[in-house]
Length: 72
Image (cartoon, rainbow, N blue to C red; front, side, top):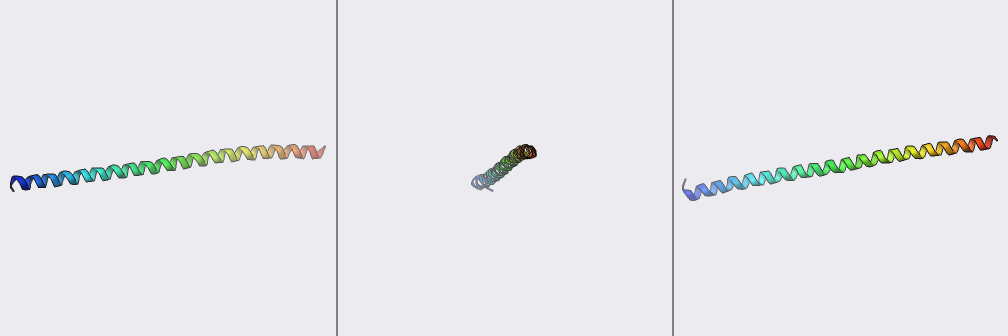
């Protein structure tokens, strides 16, 4: 192998390594974004559940008061 062939070979190795690292970084970033989205969705579900429970409690209290008024 002469110097020119060696340089080309080295450049190919470097290029493939860079492509692999870039691809790996892309995958990691993509997975992290997906995890962030899932976390936001889960947080939203928990908040909605909490708010629905509060509303149900309020409705029960109102219903109880209405029942008491009707009894009087």
